[in-house]
Length: 247
Image 1 (cartoon, rainbow, N blue to C red):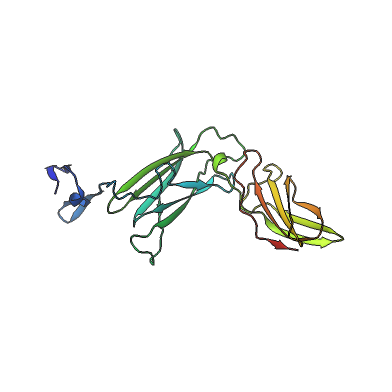
Image 2 (image 1 turned 60 degrees about the vertical axis):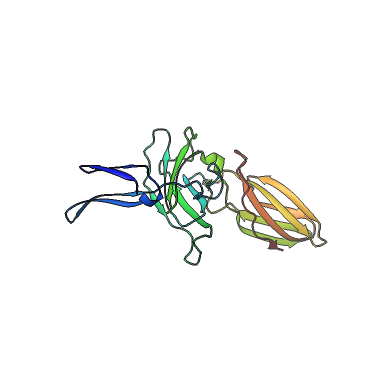
């Protein structure tokens, strides 16, 4: 046990080590006054998978101010996260994050995901200041306290296009589609670049890139087609492909 000194409601621990970790409570008779959980981070038991700078990944499907962040814990742990606009924005409320599965063993990596929103974000304005993500996690052997600064324009990745239709008539393939349901509107302002990949019945493939349109025609005897999109203004990551649409 660590050496400890008590002065009023203050408890001082010296030489803190694993046996001294746990929940410390302060009582006045039957009444609980305060509670503090103490944990020592052991470098031999890292909590997150990956290097500290890359352990957490974040993505936004639009410019609505909402983003999703994910990470993998190497052991059972509890996490909380919050979002603020740095350097002087008021921090948001902490969100406590659940993850993993009751079927997972204690030594199996467990994925965690949280969705956070900045209610002050304006999609039509410049983004002069980064968002600040704070993530805290604790397990029986270690803890993490990570701060990430990021811009939505750097992490935006649209969802796949929707409502894809393909009809073949007179040697032409007529295609139409719609922007992702999660993409910012109006769509005439938030343009998207589309990439079409199609396959002919003889196995040959073709590819086209289009911008700001949601329909077109392709010559030839096409068997199937798939589409993806990206924000052309920031050269964002391409969205996932739609499933193959058979003609």
